[in-house]
Image 1 (tube, one colour):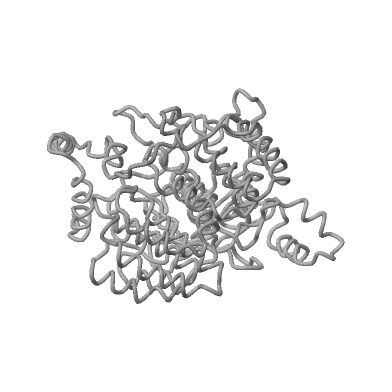
Image 2: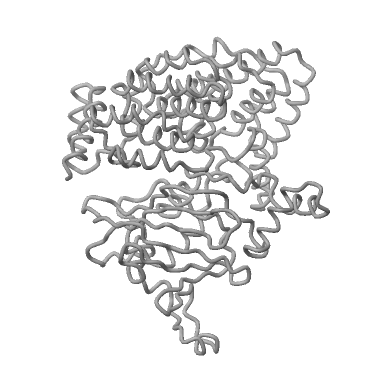
Amino acid sequence: MNKDIKDEFNKVLGKVLENFNEDELKNILEQMKEGNIFEDYESLMDNMYSYKAPSYSTLAKPMPDFMQKLFEARSIADVYTAYSEAKARMQDMAQDEREKTTRNFLLNILAKMQNGEVDITNTNQMPLWAGMALVEKFDMKVLADTILEVLIKQNYKFYQCYIEAFEEDCEYIISKVCCGQLDTLSQLMHTTGFLPFAYPMIVNAVVLMAKHDRANRLKYLAWVSTTVVDCVEETLQTELFDRLIEAAAEANATELLPLLKILYDKYKILSVTAPTYKDAENIIRNGNDHEYIQYNSLEELLDGIKEKKGNDGMQNDSMDTYDDFFLDDNDDFFLDDEEDYFWDDIFITNQKNVDMFTLNVTLNNAPLEIMRQIEVPSNIRLDALAEILTMAMGWEGSHLNQFKANGKFYEETNYEEDAFYKESGWKKFGQHEYSLRDLLNRKGNKILWEYDFGDSWEHSITLESRRKMPAYEEYAVKLLKGKNACPPEDVGGVIGYKHLLEVLDNPKSPEYMMMKDWVSPNFNPKKFSKAKTQDLIDDYLYE
């Protein structure tokens, strides 16, 4: 094992093991011998968590009928209906009454979890986030203490049930509600006993404040510099640094580079995102235009989820639960010990000397730069690579695609060659028979990937760099960065997309209303979420 990786692993493992008693340590050592150290991850997290929460049941009071409906809503449609009613009822309330009602709603959710009334496989995420939408809608900054109690101070089971699918949204709501409350956030950063995920969320929230509140940008970044130095030894450093570097890149926060230089030199951080300070500097100086949050308010998030429900055809109330929305029918989190991921369907596993390729993918001739940079194993099959490119770019995957390289076409299915191919002199092959390394092998080499033969979206794929894949490294695909949103499907290729953007930029155009109604209401050509796209790729690889 690489010495730096081994040192970092030992550092993190040591911090975790400090929380166990002698009997527990013996059990863990036995698991380590059997190769099952991560078998009980929830237990590891619980032992790192020591916050003594108050009795929420004694604080929570009965709710008015409209909030009780939201609290008990089980389907996405019911949550949306209950949220709409609550918003309408609260519109006529005095602000202090709104705040009291919403605080009590959040305390009831905490009491429900604390009393063991929540099944981890049947969650209540949407009522909580509808409550958060009310907080934002009515600008209830006075609830900052309760918001932090919910989003930062809870245990791992709460995190799994309520937070895990909405981690970026947590950072967003903290940045909105706690804006200007840096003393309170400092106190949390210097308090031990929260989950290791909590501290990076706070840091990222403050970076978001710096991005959106330009007048106080330096104050927020100064807070990050001071606070991270003070608390870096109190959390998992790799987690903190990876998230900080990504957030700094989004905010183009080059002011944080001196801080990172000091910390890299002092702590020898093994960041996955940036193994060296030079890597971190390049990432932050280059920046990116992606947004953590692809909506303008949490209410817009609810609208998007309701829209997705309709698009997915989830009309049957018996099927319309949160598990049905957040999990696909084929998801299985409890695999048999003997069951393996079907790597042979994705990678050519008998290839030797596998490298990790960094690919720059650019949509050719687009009216604005649309690019993704991904790192993939060189032995990935072309059909699997096409799936990943589809997700990375943001296409729906409803059209055919093909690779073009070295006088050959590589298509999804190896159809018989027609007159076009015979006349062009190009040969046609099936994607499933070849790996990426069969098409690319030298830095700077380029191939083409075409999606949708009608609109003919051509992407240039360039081999930016390559590195040896160590024997201990698992197969993975990392989305390193991206810029701007994918065009809508069936818009008419790059010419049609250019026309669409021109019309949307001119409300006086006679086509404006028609085009605006045609695209998704949340469409923003300059928005891209690296984290959400990575989640899609991970779902494809591991589920």
